[in-house]
Image: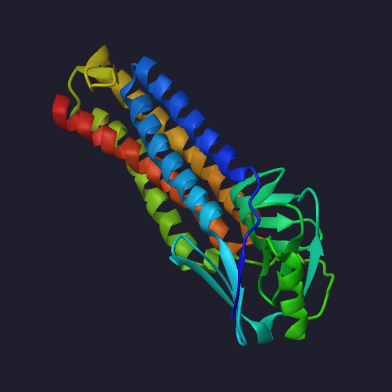
Length: 295
């Protein structure tokens, strides 16, 4: 079995600088914000950004490949991340050098490296493990394309030729007929987030109409959940309903973003609905927390 290290350019340094910049900016905003809602959203953003960036830093630093008599394997992060491609399913390969053009569905990219799921021009949906854009090898299978950047690309190509994998050029077809409404992994979170937003929007209105909200209620809080602006119960209900409307707008945008992604990759479409779900859940929890503490 031949093992192939990836050729690594400047991407690791760039990703470390990027995560440092994100942390500095978010921490600065956290220091100067005096809003409980904004502070919680920033904390969520800080955690998400760090997890996302650290994952791709580890992936970039450890990705490598191997070819044996049966499979082409791509693995990283101490083999926790592993892709196994049977050689008999590979329809062809080709090599390219230079800037990689495409649409990012998820992942991280710069002019010299691409990691994640991308729709690459003239190739289509591809899982990219490219740590350097010189001598990139694209692998074609029936359902997915893969791209790697082996350090010893000549030996890698010789290995492919030895296993009778031909050089190929191909174009992709966009799947315009994919129906997300038949996908339970999409429709279930969509229904849940819709219910949460309805509760977020209608709950304060119903409580106000039933006179179940005190005459004086906090409208805004500092980062330590201390009221900094008070108003009437009617103003509180209106503010909470406005948050519900904003979440509806976010869900609308995420819904259509999901449909755009589903044309290329079904799994990449899920993240937008889950993002809307997390945000709506945060606002609902904060609404209940206010009602529990100040009613």
